[in-house]
Image (cartoon, one colour):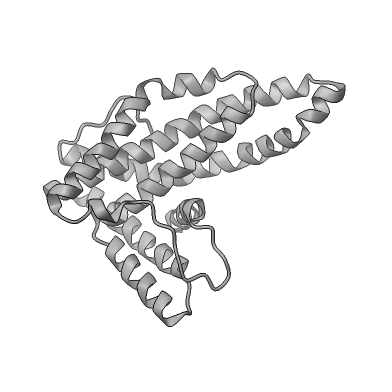
Amino acid sequence: MKRIVVIIVLIGLVFGIFAKKKEDSNELKLVLDDSKLTTEEAQIAYAKSISGNALSILPNLYTSITSMGTDFQPIIEEFNSAKEDVAYANEIMLQALDLRKDVLAAQADIKAAGTGNAGNVMMEKSKQAEAALQEMADNKTQLNNVQKAWMEAGLLRLGTAVMRETGLVIAIKQYADYAKGLKGMSKAKEAKNVTSATTMATDIPKMLSSQGNTLKNLMAIATANNIEVPDTIKLP
């Protein structure tokens, strides 16, 4: 039961990041570039480019976030980047498991019919992906080259999100301590930011908790397939 709750929370958090859900919405904003998914070779190259981008920022990410100082704007930017990382990781997993095409097909059908909610389809497929990842981790499933490329990209993108969020926990505390010491107009000026920081301080631990099981499974799958897991990626 606990694991089911964790999965549902993760899906809700991930889905909410990149799909601003509206009532009777029949269109879902996806983040992967379909023009780069035309052949297996193109998919591998695209996945490797995503991995490369993550690898380039991971080494110094935590340090840079925890030393941002008292300006709240960089905290917002890193929080948004973390949400984007999770959105990519979620969709990458669907692509790796050949489930993304089902989302696209369902979205096309819903759009043509003019009724339905594409978001529900994404949530259903995300549940399937979570179950598949758990099974693959348990069974040490061997991947083909395309799957390896996508699994590595998903691992790195989710790992980047976790690293950002872990750093943000520290950065937000530092900002909150700074804001507590303000007085008069300076305190009033930061009031809105303090409210946002309080919300983030509540949301981020929930995000980290829900992402932990997914990241653990991805790390297990990577190890079983000789995919290197950078030392900078750690479970929350």
